Image 1 (tube, one colour):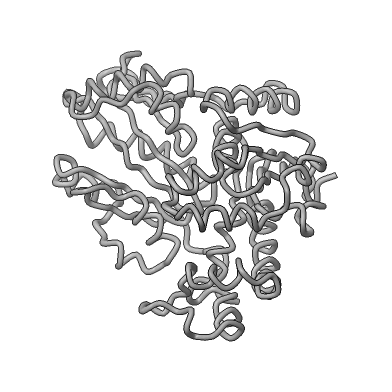
Image 2 (tube, rainbow, N blue to C red):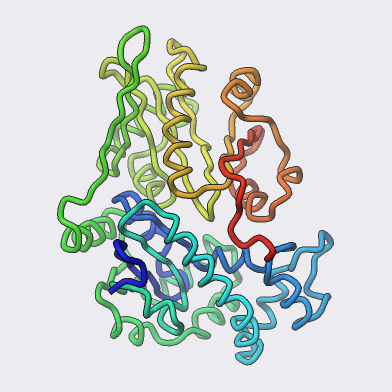
Amino acid sequence: MSAWPGKFVIGLTGNIATGKSVVRKMLEHLGAYGIDADALGHRAIAREAPGYQAVVDTFGSWILGPDGQIDRSKLARIVFSDPEALARLEAIVHPLVRQAVDILIRRSSQKVIVVEAIKLLEGPLRQWCDSVWVTYSQKEIQIARLTQKRAMSTAVAHQRVSAQPPQIEKIKLANTVIHNEGSFEDTWVQVTKAWRELFPGEEPAVSRPVAAPQGVLMVEKARPRHAAEIANLVGQLSNGKKKPTSEEIMAAFGEKAFLFLKLDGAQVGIVGWQVENLVERTDDVFIDPGQPLPKAMEVLLKEIETTSRDLQCEVALLFLPPELSGQEEVWKGLGYEPRTIESLGVRAWQEAAQETIGTGEAMFFKPLRKDRVLRPV
């Protein structure tokens, strides 16, 4: 039985670079509330967070960067080469993460929760889960992902992979094993099959009608099966400036969600957005020029913000190219203000912005809730 009445908790784990986050995102597409415990661990040691001073006191002020934040790369060099140092760090961070997980699950409205944690099976979190899912990839694929996607040297990638227990140990304890070695479609088939076995018919509604003077504007949640439609629509609405392939859109579903905007059944817009570490980010905005921008974005952003609040997001970040960001009054009218990354103040928000902002893009900010997880206590 789950530690939370009325909730079914999936514990998702696997060794480094086996695709845990991709599987978590897939489960979120299917209606689960996702929690990245490792990202909460980063929040726990940010400046002014409850674990910050304890980590500095334990490892010394030399781990601090010029901005006073803990330099996680310096800290990693210590703990990944010294098991005792890693144990000291985990003794500080893990209780704070469990506390944050408990808060998020209790506040969530979703019945199905997925908690992603690389060390799920080594601690108390395992006992809180109704089902354990493990992702698996061959070592060669792990090394390739670390060098290509995280820019690690081959030597460092080998060190990270070798420092972890054999994958077979996790597989033996799993209720479900996801082999994440092929295409996005291959993984998606495995995840949806396992989901339907656990929760027959547990998929969310796909559209929400909104009255508009010209007819009916409708926001519709896109699915991976719509990848070709999305690719064609982006090419059309960007006047050919962007020409993603359906394969690229399919892969993007491992990170984000897409919403169609339809007017009387015709597609007049598409946005791509994601929630990660309690930060909502909208970074793909394509609207038919014949559709009034304020009304179109009001409808789309209302849907995104409603969902994001339900997912307990603290802020919404909007990333726009020059042709859209110049219409500042539109964004101000929707509650967004222009910001620089530095002015965001909170490290998790700044890191989200740094990961997302594109060349020449402007960022707009809107707060969604006042309380934050892992504030000082």
